[in-house]
Length: 177
Image (cartoon, rainbow, N blue to C red; front, side, top):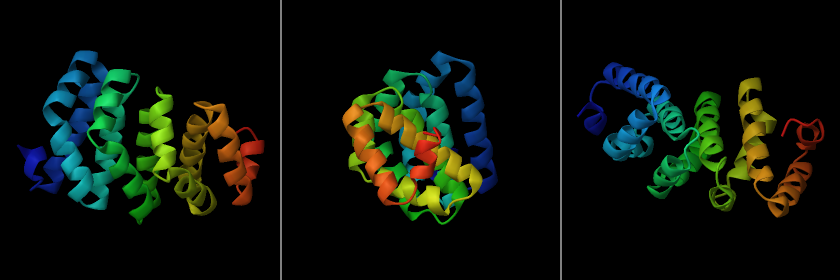
């Protein structure tokens, strides 16, 4: 119920932390979390405060981690659009880092999801984060770009060209992505 109405910020944050913990301990628990809590989590990712959105992004990533099926379910429910929106509209490097992390996890097991993330405009936003973000945010953006590039040789060349044109090629040529 708390995830549905999000009325108490402290309890909400503790609930999201508990979801992260539970999802990391069991495949069965993670599958159950997707079944029961995915829609309320996506509602918070859409309508919550920036801090809550960032925590939900991490929770989504942890639930999806190493599971093609859960990653597909979460992505098909609309998470990719909401995460790219957080990457674009977030005002803090932390929220952008958290969105980048979730995109990285969701895209890592599927060439099609990687292509969708690219089509949604995430690469330009990640390059901007590479240029302007904190060191931690830059590192996460670099890793996410790397996953997107690895999933397709055609996209890899396109992404490297974008990075070079945005003066972010140093990270590419240093092997960070």
